[in-house]
Each structure stands twice: as C-alpha cells, then as structure tokens.
Image (cartoon, rainbow, N blue to C red; front, top):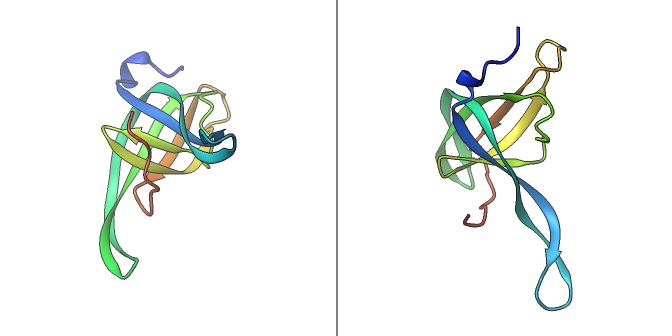
Length: 114
C-alpha cells in the first residue's frame, strides 16, 4: 500500500550547505534552499539539554516524505519557520515508497531568511 497524498499536508524546505559566490570574487560555504517538499510532520517528545552553559528546550520531529526526496542527513529543514537538524533518513520497510526523517532543534545553525 502506497503513501497516500492526504497524509502529506505540511510544507517543508530542504536546506543544504553549498559553495556560493561571496561577491568578492571568491566562494564561501552557506546554507542554500534546494527544494520544498510535501510531508507529514509529527512532533515527538521534547526535553531540556545543557547547550553553551544554558538549559534549552529541544523538540524532536518525525517527518514522512515520498521516497527519493533528496533529503540527506547533513541537511537542515525549515518547518513553519523553525530550523531543524536532520539526524537520519531511512526507508522504513524497504519498499522504496516513503522515507522517515528524524529531525530536532538541538544546536541548529541559523538559516538565511527565505
């Protein structure tokens, strides 16, 4: 049984570090939006962690997308204005229909606007 389109009702942006022109004749590494995808986003449990000498809340997400979404475990996602670190991308049943992305808000690098 395939992944029904009705489940994929959330929009996520996929961001990836790439070399871009720095405007001075050189190149720098920066976050670039590479795609926008339909997904099912489920908020999981949260917890508090000690980051940079301060306690911060961390939220975890399970994101379901169609197989072949191009999402890598080195990417970041933006969902409803929140940047998320991708922790893993797996094909849960080996049927090449969907992928499960585990992501969280822990130690997220700032993404550019847009």
